Image (tube, rainbow over all chains, first blue to last red; front, side, top):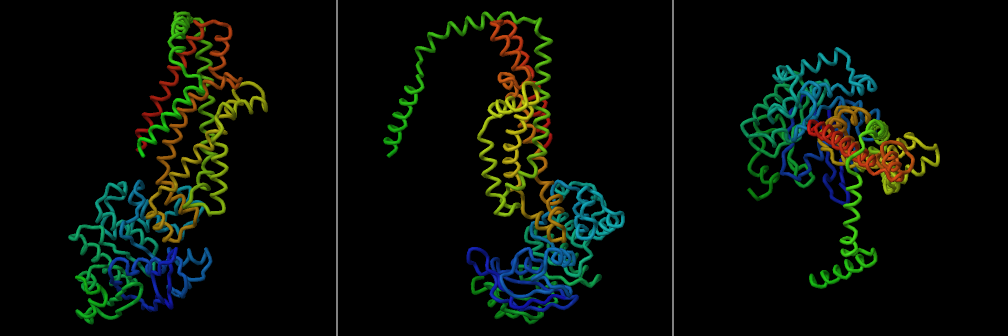
Length: 246
Length: 246
């Protein structure tokens, strides 16, 4: 589902964020990318839908080339990839349902959408996605009146509205009360198990990673230092990922 | 160090006062003349009220039409002068052009347009448009540069086109700001438009200048009072609307 080879990213002016990463992820995996902040997790995820431009290497997602694709091809591959962000990134002044409807932007007629016209089928799909995360009753509420946990669920609904093959979640629980971590991770897990979507979730928290992942990929200083199932994560592996500091 | 700076500032200040002929004694000697002027304005000549009101209405019209046209014309310029939206090759020249045109005041534009299209409110409208377009474009551009990149990333990640990203990621964030800037410009344009009549560009300023030239100070005072009332009413309405936007 995701094939990454030789991915190297140099952020201007000269910070090397990723030093040649190779990784293949199969359909239906729940991969947690683990590492300290600054290890390259966010950059890695953002390369997969080209929010960050790779310096070198190739990426394929859902059978399509991500690297080297033209503007149109990039948009086509992006709509196969839902993304959930640490800060939710909702349009604060828009209603909940309009935020979810934004997930359909890659499919609807672009010019009509700019004037606020969306096909009925897309509206219904957005509605169904909002119901799926249990927030159908808040459809007309302005996004910035929702709690953090609710906002992140809306963001997940927006990703689902893309009818994606892959969902990327970049530290989806890091901005939330720890008590809400499991509610968000449970939704992501359900999407993975029930709909068979491939999930790539970054986490800096070890316990959460071990509890949900089918596979852990450990990043340190822009390199993959571990790749295996949660049960293979030994204290030595933890030290390799996090370093000696506690 | 601070003493040296203070000394230099004092010298500069003294030189400025000398070079501009600033002289408190002359001001004191002139005070009776000001009082005499005010006394000769009393009581206001209400017989010119209809003319003054008609002039005020024309001034409001000039400011409204000019501001409305400028608010629209400034949109593309605003986006082109925003560092985070426009390509580098576009935004530096756009900035330079805006700064050039913005450094010329509305009244100077009025002189040019009166020469070009003749007397009346039309050159006044053109002058308001010329100045306001560039000053609004600069404010718009700064608002666009200040947007939260999060929602923009999120909309981009759905596979949206650049136009859709602007419409759904950027515009909802900047629209309230834009409207607030437009109202603020309307307030200042009302004030600017009151003097446009001095150079033949229509509105209440024409009456003020005419009565002053005819040494009919009582009629001039009516015009002045109407001007003050007009500015206060527009300010009150506009600031109330602006409060609602936030």
